[in-house]
Length: 464
Ligand SMILES: Cc1cc2nc3c(=O)[nH]c(=O)nc-3n(C[C@H](O)[C@H](O)[C@H](O)COP(=O)(O)OP(=O)(O)OC[C@H]3O[C@@H](n4cnc5c(N)ncnc54)[C@H](O)[C@@H]3O)c2cc1C
Image (cartoon, rainbow, N blue to C red):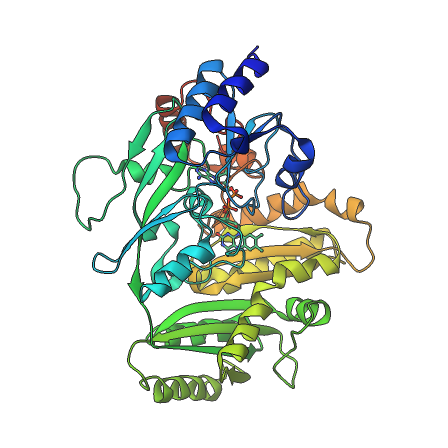
């Protein structure tokens, strides 16, 4: 058994009093997951303030055989951020934007910098960092890269993996890997930085990352549409992709009603009722170029019967309100009672088929349940959530979680999709991954883990 007191003393020595706490009242908020689905425990929380401190702390824990769970903003949704006895290593004091180079279009940030702060630093330098999630005020770059976060702009810019040239990471033995890079071209063997992207903290602690910046658009046009069905949304998506489309999100009627009824300050922009809604963004780099293209696109979509109505935001406030209708979906769904959630992807063209099949299958199992799938139509990622019937007892409803997940994931598998589109595996999908993934893939994942973390120090319960 590791000697916790000896480890504590050694950690205090390298981190100082601000870098370590065992006060459970201070630690408590970091042990609860955002949706109250996971509750954790830890003897210690450590908060190194530099890469060198992180390396020294990891070395102490590794030599004592004590497991570590890295944590950034604690916004992860698959239980991978909630410790069960591991030492909790918070990156919140790794919080500097180290450099911004507009010439290279590269920004280097410590892992604990929030996504919002990175976006703002990029903007201040006349550039755009395009990763965008509803949790961006709290989630961190280290967490974003470790989960390979997606968000609303994947259709144009890709996921977090596509937005990074390299990482600096502390390995499970305390060594520092420096893969930070300003280079666009570098063919010198395996791309080791990429091992840490989507690794969910199982291979080491990302301490910093070099991130790709993009030109800042001169105009953003945001449009919300009312639709009778998802086939119409697909028709619009196909046409819109010829334009400057960067986002295409969908919301079902139940979701919009939940948001407008429960989130103060948000209202339905349409006079009529629609079964589905879409929120679309278009970016333009030449002032004034967009007017005729946008009007032409949406009047053609109306004529073709793809959409029933459209609202074009006239100013930044209106644009923010339209996006807020989508971004508050998860928060508003809490008001509908208990829900069973899925984060899945299918080929974009198969989203309507997925929705129809999943709705039919889950309501066959539980006729009164309320399917409420929403999300990123533009990249095929649907947050397929199912709310309990009004007034239903939460515990009774949640007993169906396993059966519901199997039904939904079976359909996803049949449609050549993924059971985890953007949130990762964590604890919640660990068994499903082991059951469904190609055995060769599982063996390779295990081989990589054993090669880099033979003592299973880093997030040992997560993913594999
Ligand atoms: C309201 C809301 C909306 C969301 N929307 C989206 C969305 O649109 N798209 C999306 O992809 N996700 C979304 N998420 C999920 C979440 O915000 C992302 O997964 C995010 O990337 C997690 O970042 P974090 O800093 O909070 O990481 P945490 O939750 O702290 O950790 C997540 C995982 O990464 C590991 N980790 C954290 N930091 C490091 C590090 N420095 N080195 C190594 N491992 C590390 C942790 O151990 C854990 O396994 C949403 C969450 C909420 C609450």
